[in-house]
Image (tube, rainbow, N blue to C red; front, side):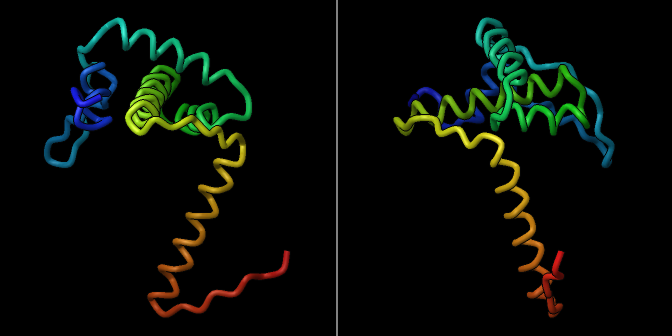
Amino acid sequence: MSYFPSDKHITSWAGLSPGNNESAGKKKRSKSLAGDKALKSIMCECAWCASMSKDTRLSMCYKRWVKRMGKKKATIALASLMLRICYQLIKERKTYIEYGSTYLDKLNNKREENMVRILKAKGYRIEKAPV
């Protein structure tokens, strides 16, 4: 994997990295990037299959993204995520660990802890109310 210095380089080469067309604070639409058509189509097909699976980290990400960006863009984003995961697994010679449906719970817990930490740093006192 020394050909690609980072996971962002391989997603750009595959044409899966997002366009960043912004001028004067206005974000503009952009076409999907030209890249390796074979790899891009394979990754998009895999992303579509992964989005239909149940209780996986990838399907949870897809469901979260599809609400705000639509099915096609969410599929491209998921394909990009999967390619970055594959790159890291090959580079570091590790196995993939599936977090399942607990992925979002862990993510939300981290967000809550960060919010509490920020509020405490600003001088607020936080108490948990019994539910």
